[in-house]
Image (cartoon, rainbow, N blue to C red):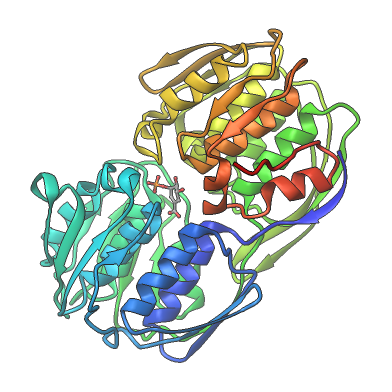
Amino acid sequence: MDGECRLPGDKSISHRAALLGAIAEGTTEIENFLYGADCLSTLRCLKSLGVGIEQDGSRVRITGQGPAGLEEPGEVLDAGNSGTTMRLLLGILAGQEFFSVITGDDSLRGRPMGRVVKPLLQMGAQIYGRASGLKAPLAVIGRAKLEPLVYRLPVPSAQVKSALLLAGLYARRETTILQPVPCRDHTERMMVAFGANLRVDPDYTVHVSGDKPLRGQRVEVPGDISAAAFLIVAATLLPGSDILIRRVGINPTRSGVLEALNLMGADITPCNEHCTGGEPVADLRVRSARLRGVEIGGALIPKLIDEIPILAVAAMAAEGVTVITDAAELRVKETDRIESVACELRKMGADLDTLPDGFTIRGGKPLQGASTSSWNDHRLAMSLVVAGLATGSGATVVGDADCIDVSFPGFAELLDGLGAGVEVLSD
Ligand code: S3P
């Protein structure tokens, strides 16, 4: 592979810019917004809540309604496949005095929502749902003034943290969130940029109160490091590669994949480092390299949780054993990513065992192309495409690959444009 590229905007940051823009005063202009299905779900829900949204190329203009200006939706809000849409929006809906119902696709309706619902109930919102309120569809009757909360996150989840920080904007007094292990902090950075009263202690405890109005901003969304990870691993594994990926977000709470790949022996050079909207950004030059097995676990896991499927692909091509632990959260992602990744990579000859919280992968074994399935999980689909590039013989077909549009529209074309040899088949 060779050449350079720019990536679609970061998914987490695109969601947050739209959500904060909706409850801010004034206009928010978002550049390089991710037009993936997940972020489009957020825009669709916001439109149903009466938010003015104009889309123009990769730019989105949001007319802020102020904290109390959202309208009761006349229809069920549909978050599609997007956990971020559902969980973060629940934090905002908890602060609205009207009735709303939110649901999602089969995968999202099976994912745990109690982790957000329970603390929001403690703040005084009324939320009802399937499985005693633990699963969507969820019905919400919020309150204009919520009770403040001091809450220790039971799982290192940025979606839970963000939902509670958003609800904290509607609380009578300061809300405090304690994080035993730090997880992505885009919400904190963006709330500060929008003028919120938010501070973070050295031990990552976050305090927020709603006594300062949010002001609409111009947000330039960096390229998504989770999308970059697929290109980085592909270039690393394909001999003779040398690519440059421009303007990738390298927020330290998100860039664990770079740390892990560096440990494995990858050749990744960041250059042109700068900051935009409080988020660090860099161009990444990636050259092919031989990888070795490593141990990945502990506090690194939340910083690379979405990249574990593609790290598993890197591990199957590496010399030696890779052990990934402390990642039980993978079981409640878009699919059970421990089972789905293991099942599909085994079809290509991967030698691996699943653990309750990760994998043991014995790399460097001969791999062959295979007919695989995405399980309708976008990150599994892209991981299998990259795995297919790394096999020694035979073509790989990834079925149901249109789910890639959830987070990386244009993935196959971009990869192919860099010389990787990927073809999109019509059904
Ligand atoms: C996200 C947080 C992570 C991540 C997801 C996006 C976010 O989920 O897996 O893809 O934007 O806050 P959790 O917070 O559930 O770990």
